Image 1 (cartoon, rainbow, N blue to C red):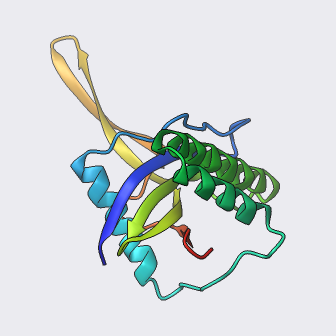
Image 2 (cartoon, rainbow, N blue to C red; image 1 turned 120 degrees about the horizontal axis):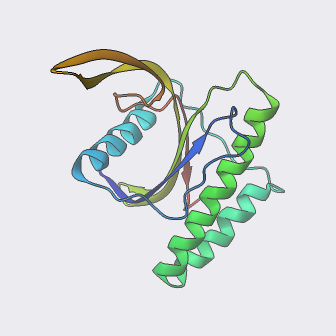
Length: 172
């Protein structure tokens, strides 16, 4: 499978906060991040838990997708902004659900504009936080002191989304 990523917009969804932290633009991608998201998307396609679905005819989300697709046919700059606006609306809806259903874990939401074998897709990837530790070193007098500091918002180190939706923009 050939995956080509156009952009990734990352939003922070922590129901412990009063509101989500929504990005205003796509993230800058280096080779490591590009590889991470490519592998995450490939794993989502290959998952045994994949289910094929369609939007209901009266789906507001399907209407948003169609509107965004119209923008993509205009100018790439407008399409990019529309894709970011769409990603912010998706993140807002998911955050509202997280507030209502407190069993949904905090995490980051990556909305990926990509193609797979030439077919345009949106990937909605939920990356749940995992607890972990990092080191901390201080200078104390004439010596150093190192300790471990707990972190509650580490992202998965392996390229696998906890939950994912892959939306074929060509046919919904």
